[in-house]
Length: 309
Image (cartoon, rainbow, N blue to C red):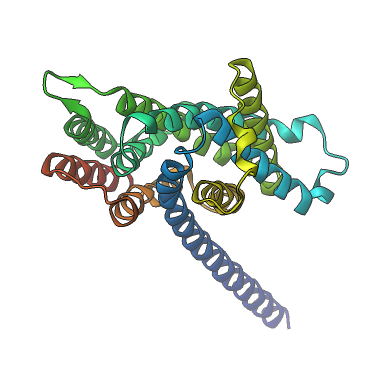
């Protein structure tokens, strides 16, 4: 009888483990699909930003975009903030500061470079993620990561360096912004294990929107007041798309999916935004790539694959 009972318990544990493993695989697969969707959306935001900047200044665009996303998120998830404590907001605050610095550099950089080129240069954040993860989680990068870094550097040089070894201002700002995007991915990966994804996303939008409005007012930038004059103008529609899809949906989905994926897995999938961004820039904006830019872009993409796969 005891043998039978032990056998029965073993079967039950095995069955439970099988169900749990299958559930984990399904969850991870759904997370990977979600991150692919985020990469596609992020790729489209390069073109949407370029269009919106025809009517707005960078700071005004950021202020409207992220405040809009904050209002949407806090309305939908308002019940999750009941009884919330300051320590539950740390991840969102740090993510918001990192993204503010990343976006202000990237958005201003877009004034001095084209959308397709910036899409590829922004993808360089995937190289920084393993090193920031090393600092945060004490996980040393492998040799292939170092190889990927060298190849990525060469790709960035091909795209950014002009005759006379000069890096254009917009390219340099974009490269620096990619470091802050990498920081946001690592911070989100660290805090999402203990904080609510919806709260973290909402708080980071509030921080970004607030900082953007303060910065705009400090320099006397009131361009955001003009956005309501014609809600059906292409620039207004672009801002609406950026606020709802490009921000509220994409960044909430990123943090939600990252709860079940490592920072390195997240970064390699999200780096595909560079590919989607370049394709959409060529289709919608009519931007063209020179052979040098194409070779440099391929080098960056190969570096991403070597470092993360």
